[in-house]
Amino acid sequence: MSAPAPSPLAIVDAEPLPRQEEVLTDAALAFVAELHRRFTPRRDELL
Image (cartoon, rainbow, N blue to C red; front, side, top):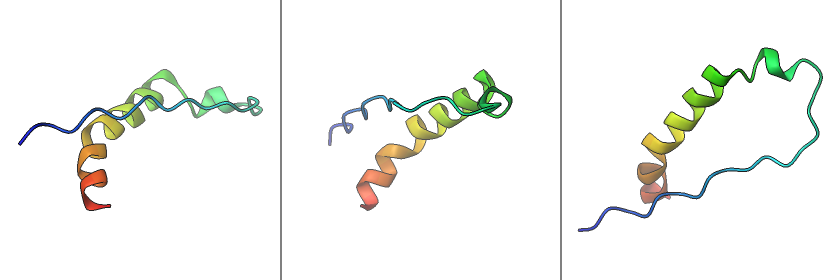
């Protein structure tokens, strides 16, 4: 069995919100990206 193809990168095309940088720090975005990389294949499998 071959590995599933990686999911494309998510691109958010929206206007910035006030103070969003306080929540969407580089560390927070890296964490979400790692969750995406780690769990998307299994999520896709279940869907």
